[in-house]
Structure formats: C-alpha cells, structure tokens
Length: 391
Image 1: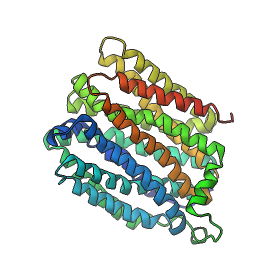
Image 2: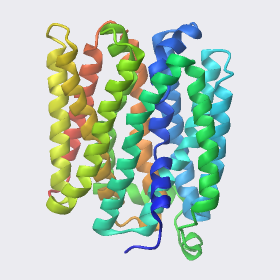
Image 3: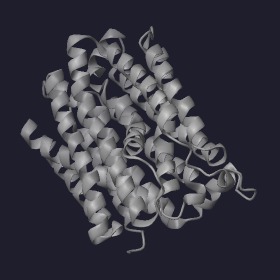
Image 4: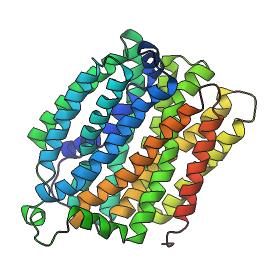
C-alpha cells in the first residue's frame, strides 16, 4: 500500500533520521581538541558521545508512543527547534560536565527525527515496499557519515570544534522550516484517536510478546554496538596511535560511511531478490568476519593497511543490518508504529551508549580493547539472530 508523498518529503525523512550521525560525526574529528580545550580526560570526552546516545535512546521511548496519539508532525516541529537551540548552547559550555548535559538534551531532541521518520514511513507503506523505503531512508541516512566527518575536519582545520555545533544549530532551523512547510501529518485522526489503543506500557508489553520483533531488535542492537565502539574509539586510535591528521581521519571515516550508504542501498535490492532474512544473514556474517579479522590484526605489527579493510567491513555491513532488521521488525506494526520504532531505537542507542565509556576506560595506546569489544557484541548478535525462525 502506498500513499502520496513526494521525493522531497522522502529526502527530508532521510535527513531527519540522520540526527545521530550528524550529532556524532561532524564533531568527532575535533574530539581530541575538545579534550585538550576543556582540560579533561579521554573517557570524559567520550562521555559526550554517551550522553548524546542516551538522549537519543530515552527520547524515542517518550516520543514514539506519544506520536501514536497526537500525530507525527507536532513532535517533529518541537524536536527540530530544541535540537537547534541545544546545539547553539553547546558552543558556550564552560566545562566538560555542562557540555555532557547539553549533549544529553541535544540527543533527546534529535530522537524525534529518528523515531518519527520511521513511523511516518510505516504509516505510508507496507510489505516489500516498506522494506524498499526503509532501505532508501537508510541510504540517505548513510550519506551523512560520509559528508559529516569530511566537513567536520575542514571546519575544525579552519576554525574550531565549537563551529561544528553552530552548523548543527543552523541545520536544526532549516529542518524546522522544512517540516513546517513540506511535511503533512501522516497518522490519520481516526487512528490517533482509537479508543482501544493500548497505553504506553501496554503498547510496549504487546511488542515484548512478539518473539521475532524482540529478536530482531536485539540483533540490531548488538550488531550496531560494534559501530558505536568504532565511533567512540576511532578518532583516538587513528589519530593518536597511527598519527593520522584530522583531514585524513575525516576522509577515512567518510569512506567507511560511504560503505554504510552502499550496503543500505544493496539491502533493499537483495531483500527483493533473495528475501529479507537471507540478505540479513549475509550482512551479519560479513560484519562478524570483519570483526574477527580486526582482532587478528591487533596481534600483528602495527599497520594502517592491515586494520582499515576489516574496519570497513565492520562498519559498512551495519547499513544493511539496520535496514533489514528494521524492515522485518516493523512489518505489521502500522497500529503501533511509533512505539515499535521507539523500542528499536532504544535498544540500539542504549547499548551503543555503553560502548563509549568502555572503550575510553582502557586508554588510548592500543586498539586491542576496541577490537575485543567489537567481536564480543557481534558474537552476541550472531547468536541472537540464530534464534530467529528461518524464513
């Protein structure tokens, strides 16, 4: 089933779903500089990532069920405004703790775009068309991990890390105007006002009773945790251990981000040709192979050319994994799309938020802890996926 929605609106939904890579990747090249400017430790600097991820996780739990009752458009408008304001306020943070709190608020605001872009798509599409549209959405989303670190590296090279948050503030304003003028309400009034719609807790309880939904959510969470471990550790590993410049780091990060976009696009095609389950199995195996190869390189003499290919495999396959686990989990959730989207996001970002302090606790002189963590979470994800009934 397909309803009318234009190309610009679909592109806008893709950008709204990219609040996470935008909030992470644009300032990531400046994380070592941020640490130095605020006279703080590596682990505390990485807590700015954790705070944002925590906000992204908690916000979805609130906004998702709320949108099932009042619609998608109003929360999106408030979320884009708050995202812009919090981004601008971060510029004036006097110390690391204020910055961490503001990043939490920024994450809460950004969660609206992530959870509601998916809910809007689920309002409008079903079946294989839903899978294709989610893949397109994730492909657009995947462009930003390509562009953000490159632009971030350039911005930091000519200005400072604070300027990246000014850019995010302006983006928040642009998205607010775009939603206001171009995005209609997609949740019909009769659905929003259904008398027997379950409570927030009841809606979540219904989802927890759906075994396959839970398995897909957990598979996504653990396989994506490998990506967040990479995000948290890569700037220190590549810049401090391997001596990369900010600009070169941005280029490498962008190449890996391009892999996410490519695999997201490929997921939609493979889902139609081979089926969602089979395609997902290939992506999970490919990512796990990359993690194992990365761990092996940690025992070998230090070489950039040895670690970059497995890192690419770990990161890129996440694009296909997110697209397909999301599509499989959201099938049949039209009545509860906001809550279902929220639980998928909560699992992904809550677990992802734990990766940053864990990576940071083990210092910045070896990438062995990052490699072990990546393989560990991938192994759990692989085992969970094996419990899904073969389709």
